[in-house]
Length: 302
Image (cartoon, rainbow, N blue to C red; front, top):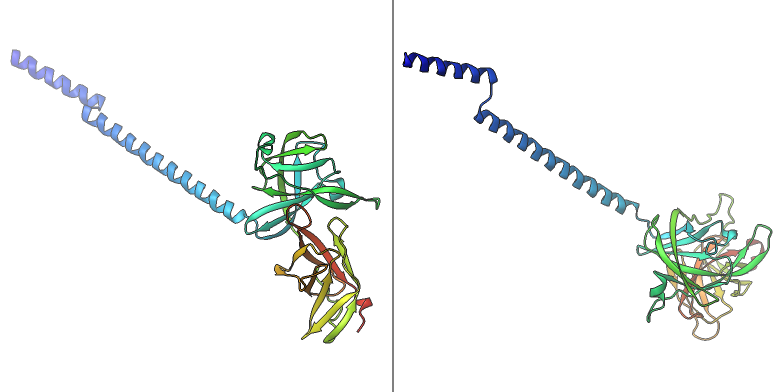
């Protein structure tokens, strides 16, 4: 009788286990599978995140500006510190060897120095304070005015950075600025109806200078030499303090050692604005200043 009862008990346990359909062994297997699936998903998510981060870095590299000159918006957090209204909120952004600098003409001469960083750091010994240039701006009504301008190093596009300023009252103030929407400056090119290059020879030609503070001038008319179909102009400045000029990416040194600075530079076309850069040592630190030169074909005399 006892044997029969034990047999029935074992049969009942077997049926119960079958109906439930689980066992310690099966439960462990399901847990292990779930853990493996979670681990695989985490690895996939991590890899996707790393791939996305890598793409972002590659995209950032692709977005880097090439060396050249651009117009760009210069935004500030102050109504008292901003680009002169004549320039429509824009400055000239120069990219050279991957480093960016924006030149902005301000509203007046009331801001006398800038500093990239905080006001407290601007007052420390050895702080690299930015000195102003004197710019001439022309308003929509034709009136012109001299204001201060600054060449400001730019760490990044579309990102705010600190710039401190000091005015005529001698107190430093903190501000936030940003540079955005750089657009390449396309130099004027001669049209299909451009003036033909004169025959080889030596000529005199009137030349017009624009840009800078308006204080510097050049001699006009000037000598224009044509050799093998290429034009070269002699540029004589009203100052001995210009130590080099840059034309189409090439640097040119003075051809004289005494008196006002004289340069011989290439001229791509007549009657077309030629963008040049001239470096002056007249200020406390050397400054590259942007100019344009236009040679008048109507004045050309052999």
